[in-house]
Image: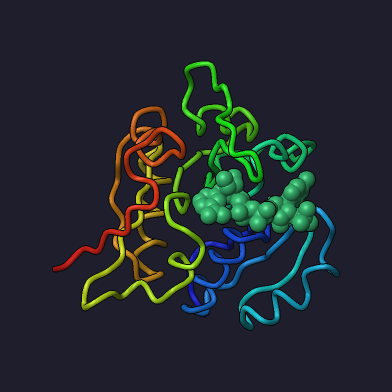
Length: 203
Ligand SMILES: NC(=O)c1ccc[n+]([C@@H]2O[C@H](COP(=O)([O-])OP(=O)(O)OC[C@H]3O[C@@H](n4cnc5c(N)ncnc54)[C@H](OP(=O)(O)O)[C@@H]3O)[C@@H](O)[C@H]2O)c1
């Protein structure tokens, strides 16, 4: 097992499960949660791998690193009533758009991660794992001898260093885009120039 910090995942749909698969590939433990409780996730967690366990939202949110991948309009409910994050890291893997209408959300000039950050008081927010489709996120990151690129953005250097290390451990190449407000916008969908770009770093 890995010596990485403990990881919780809120949202076990396409992106939450794809992230769990990327962790399971390296035997990194994580707690996977959704709105319906652990019983609804036992089979999925088992199918992903032995390092992944079904838990509830509160357990997932209590880990050192918490990835959130929930439909945009459901984020306030998914994050409500949780204790202050107290300087722990929350990964924002979300985008401000939703099936089936895919209508852009009015963010009133803010980046979606700035809006997200207001929902996770006390957290060091790092935007990451939001620019690729779930198939690529859960696939082997080694591509023709290079490493598939993942982007990250955030305002806390220590938090970004930890997520860079995790990205590296998963076998991807991390590229730091800068601040949440600036770099975060580059991978934001819709609006940013980087979503869905499948880039591979050689060397
Ligand atoms: N799909 C993509 O290609 C893609 C790519 C990049 C980024 N994203 C972003 O990633 C986020 C998730 O997308 P997705 O495609 O993974 O969505 P999804 O497949 O619909 O999954 C959403 C997950 O959120 C959970 N959830 C909803 N309300 C919750 C609550 N109150 N508490 C805890 N969990 C709750 C759902 O659990 P229940 O089923 O139990 O309600 C479900 O597991 C979105 O912000 C999306 O924009 C998606």
